[in-house]
Length: 140
Image 1 (cartoon, rainbow, N blue to C red):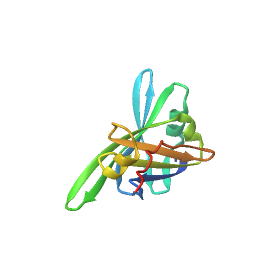
Image 2: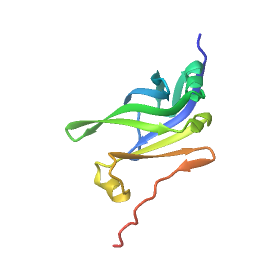
Image 3: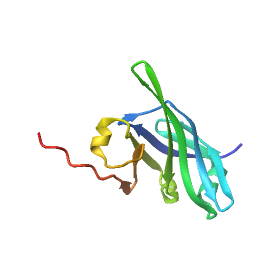
């Protein structure tokens, strides 16, 4: 039986905690290429095997991404979003994370952040956070 590494992870997209994500995996980039590592996720919980977790932290691993798809129902249409988030290896050593993603296709977030990217993200973890600079709100 494989030992499991469990991490408390909450993924929020456009200020909503989501459970309808699919194809979640990590991408470990080494000098020899990429390796995809599957993980299981439900809100508040991420698990992967200890051996896969150790691969992500290995010194030969240069960069780690978390990758997944999210489907959102808007009125009568479904929209599929793909995310690939650059995950700093040191963050993997913490026991919880909050990942907040904002879709720049939505006006609310275009008005909030200055970027040409299709989405932006922030992380919170014990002892730190990566917060984005917000635009000043317009006086009314």
